[in-house]
Amino acid sequence: MSQHSPEYNIVLQGFFVSDFKRDLEEAVRNSKGRRNHRKRSPKFYLYSARDSAINDIVFTLLGDTPETFLPPHSSNLLVEAWKNKSSGKLSVRVIYNNKVLRVLGKDGSNEPWCDMNSCDYSTFIDFLSKRQITDPATQCAI
Image 1 (cartoon, rainbow, N blue to C red):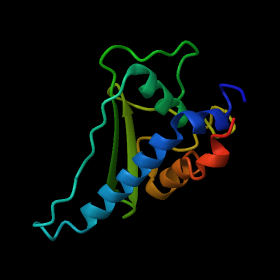
Image 2: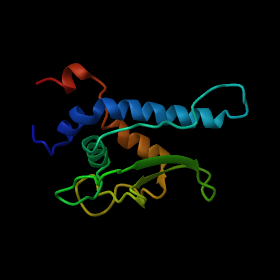
Image 3: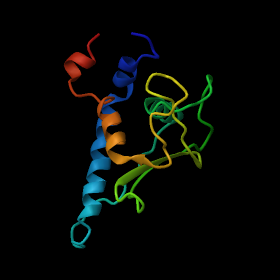
Image 4: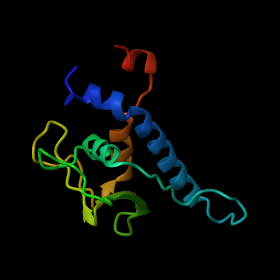
């Protein structure tokens, strides 16, 4: 298995992607039911990570980064979901170090698989679904 293969990336980040996807879906679900103010549910999640973990997450999203990519000190990655006023649908924005993350195509082309300034929520969740660990016994087997 090559270190650049999708399978390797799933083994490396698949468990985090599973947790992240679950948390994002929960935050969206909770924000839809905000009328019940007594319910104590998270409105956002905060993760703290080292440079290598941020690097892995950016690569999982197919971020367009230089070959020798190392996140600078104090790097940050923000993922936000909101209801797009023009379409009425949920959208996701991914910001890496104060700039919208540019991503490559699923086939490695320069055509982004999604515009991270306003990516359709369902498209984003579907993308994450294909990069998470669902069966550790087979996906993580050596």
